Image (tube, rainbow, N blue to C red):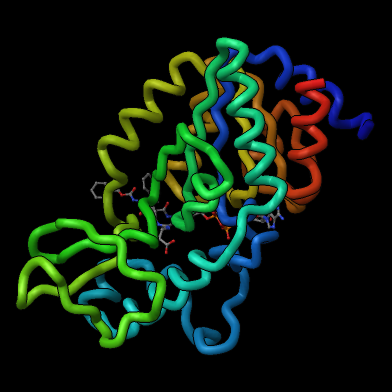
Amino acid sequence: MIPHLHPAATALAHAQHVVVITGAGISAESGIRTFRDTMEGLWKDFDPATLATPEAFERDPATVTRWYDWRRLGCLTAEPNPGHIALARLERNLAATDRHFTLLTQNVDRLHQKAGSHNVIELHGSIIQWRCTASSRTTTPPPEPFTTFPPPSPFVPSAILRPDVVWFGESLPESALDAADIAMRSCDLFCSIGTSSVVYPAAGFAELARRRGASILEINPNPTPLSPLATWSLRGKAGDLLPALVDHALA
Ligand code: BV8
């Protein structure tokens, strides 16, 4: 028993609607670098915040699609870790006891779905899916590298494909925002896991939950701007703390 988990585990055991938001940190233990980790290797001279923009894509679609294809292939071969698996277990248990669970993710790697999570709202889209720049039709490319950059669209001869993610300066999908809004209305426990809590509007959900009187649990090895506002801010890795927390909550 990890004593400092106890009050958070009790809250998890009694919550009626748990809303979880995850960031790149929950996928770190699956070998996927976080968004603000220093870039290394091929991409060490690039800054994700500038590459993840429509302007960069406009200026240099070959480099941007090469970077996303490299990340896409890493996501396809990555496996969910105990943190992802604990959240899928928690969702199953809450559903079985007539309670609610909503998973908001900023991640584009689809590891939550691979771990068995069902009610997943992808706030920033998915790198596994790509979109035609002319028709906006989407396709899931096969699990091998593109052969030309930027990749041609299979739908419109003159168009190209882009990753179906939300770039900086782009709006989040209306459907995702609407689903998140509905979940936040009845949320009584909000868990922020593995995110630096600096990107909006995603980082605003924790503040909204707090204003509405929900308890806030944060799991992160490092402090974030959310930490001083959280009811409990647990310093540690998602892959270590989440399984222990869910074990105690479901015991
Ligand atoms: C928009 C997809 C408006 C692509 C990403 C206020 C309101 C609205 C917008 C803004 C605003 N203020 C500023 C903005 C603009 C901007 C923004 O927020 N900028 C920030 C930097 C200030 N927001 C936007 O542009 C958004 N769009 O609002 O549009 C609009 C309105 C009208 C019309 C047009 C437009 C769009 C934002 C989405 C951008 N896309 N990703 C891709 O993946 O390439 S964001 C990017 O940051 C990531 O992908 C991720 O989704 C997001 C957050 O990062 P984290 O997931 O937190 O990752 P990070 O590396 O930062 O942190 C990892 C954490 O894990 C760390 O804390 C670490 O300690 C922890 N950790 C490490 N190991 C572990 C761990 N935790 C647990 N366990 C471990 N083992």
